[in-house]
Image 1 (cartoon, rainbow, N blue to C red):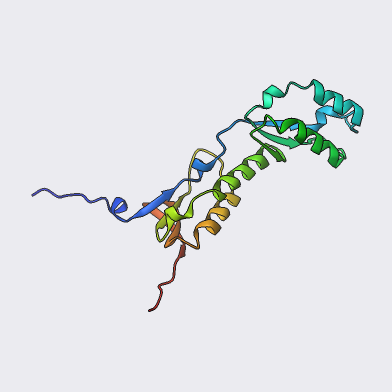
Image 2 (image 1 turned 120 degrees about the vertical axis):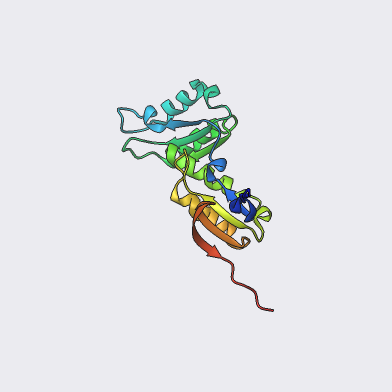
Length: 172
């Protein structure tokens, strides 16, 4: 007598969503304002404008730019605006903050672009483990995005999940 093995996970109708699929694919390059400070303390407008004119902007082409200042200095708002204005024609995206903040921002933007119709009345497992450092904020964002449409939301792997949300039964 031969036994037939049934893959209950495959037959369960569970949809797995891996947040790593929405991680930024483009290179992230940091534009650090500290490199333009006089004596590491102040930004001189004339010098900064000249530096931007001489900057090889091609290194920023089709890249995500994290615009930041890693030095403990007061940078005037117009300086960030000048840098963004110079970078914008070539950069794919400009995010204020360090590299990690840029990843968070782009990941959040990519999650916002998810078509929720694909998850309407589905059992969804948000994959928990992976290779990339997906932040807590991404898990919060996907939960907020899917809760109004999904039948249920779980965290983990299809074979071992933690229930997060289950749509209440509607009474007729």
